[in-house]
Length: 267
Image 1 (tube, rainbow, N blue to C red):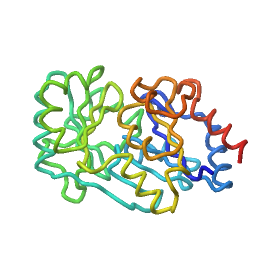
Image 2 (image 1 turned 45 degrees about the vertical axis):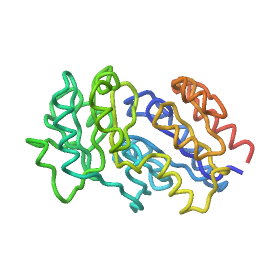
Image 3 (image 1 turned 30 degrees about the vertical axis):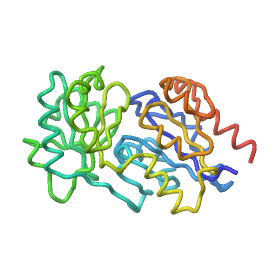
């Protein structure tokens, strides 16, 4: 019997950057919980963004945030994977030097940018509902908010921009993942959505065979490998579909919601 469901958000549950979700899913998740099935939102997003998306049931689900850097519920943080501050700043310098790219330095509390008036910064705060703060330089992140993620942003081709030099230099030092076409997320070497899912399984006493995972991108693969039921959304990358047990409808057609509703009928 399935007891734990984990779903990626952008590209899987909703189109990239969406600030809204089909409200029908709230009732479905509540009913699944009544049947003993726990729901986890797993995303590169900051907690405040995911909490906003799931606001009506925010206290009834678990969260894997910042690409796998944090595991928590609404009130309690169970695990945080920080990265070395000097390393993060060196990476930020290199990102700034790449034409047309921007950088975000993420703590557990806030996402830090060099200019809050850029299109990227407005998108994070207005569409994603991130808590965004402007800093004068990459050396001014506060000590009371240790860094957990560095992200490279490009409007249309983050992976291509990072491929020549940035990824080869850092891929052995940190966990690097493509989050859609716009982001390269860099977190602690041993952190990932999959690693945090395993922590949650252990905490709840739930096995991989009792777990269902939804994903669409490369950064979802490890999480999907930790589940007996792996579901690629219809618009997923070919590599993800090839690894999945099942293929659902596209995100714009509420593919995840359709599967959850069918699951509910079997319980």
